[in-house]
Length: 101
Image (cartoon, rainbow, N blue to C red):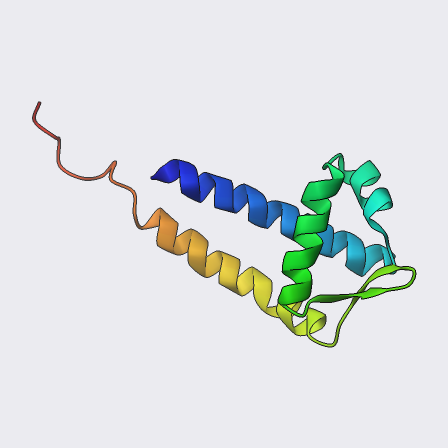
């Protein structure tokens, strides 16, 4: 159950690293992103596809570039991550009464 969440968080982290690279280096191609992040080409390509589906980046002849929607997404991101962190923190069981074995 937790393993799936951990994999999703890892994937989100990769998507956000790829987005950050596009924001900081646009236009940028797959090869440069792969070389700089250490992620295999296919994982960078998948992250780019996800970001494109979310209208956060778009392809150009020189590589990926940001869209009009990117700035708004980035502006809202920290708040959304804080909400999720708080929600996950509230799920802790360690303060629950002792379990009897």
